[in-house]
Length: 338
Image (cartoon, rainbow, N blue to C red; front, top):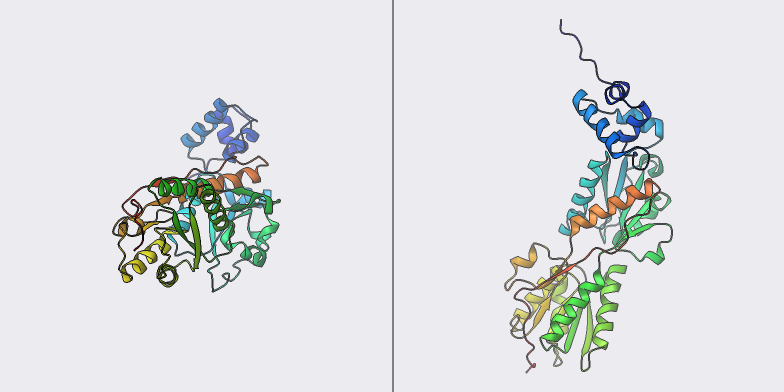
């Protein structure tokens, strides 16, 4: 009869590495920085690998009162951007022995049913998009360690914030279009009450106000291609047609393309169009879309890293995540409307 394999313990690892069991616990729990040296930590990791040691996370979590589970609150699961945010957050979480649970709050449907009898008992913390902030109150997620994504730092004094440099993206777009000679602008704005869209509108207004001879109109649309078609048709049909449309989202830009073609306008000959996000859709359009690339996976990574810092009583990394202007075929020199 085969003998059962004896599972190595933390005491075995400590003996093999020549350190205390407390040091093993610190290293395997990723709490060693500032408490043991890098050389000691590596010695423990090497010994654990050699022995095939795996910490009993369930027992440790029960002992420490942690679940090693975090909640990611997003407005929708069908959005490519938030799929990237989840991927980045889950990657960092896995590296630290955490799991990520998704909680969708689709617009027009309302938050998903609370999957927890008690969020405070089932979760260690929450990462939430400002576009789904209302869902936090439904699960009392604002009572837990909290990181807000794309959110005004001053309006969330009890939470850490991680932001993309949205304002810089608008600055880059505006400079590009002004350099092409555009002075008549339409802002096709997302009809969503969210800080990230407020930043887009405020920055665009500020930048164009500093450029003599410019005009700016705003039309609002749901974040959908069909909604953008309807809004753009109404905004482009009048005699004071703009020469450039700045869209809050790539889907709104796609709807603007369709509206322009129905009106007999060519992109970019008659109308320059820009987007935001750089979704896969941006290169499926013809011509391909000039847009601002937001690194969704890095956004998710930074969100999870910030939450880990909060849980470890450290200050999260400061500074907004850079964005990049991607120039493609949807923008060209301004032409005077007929």
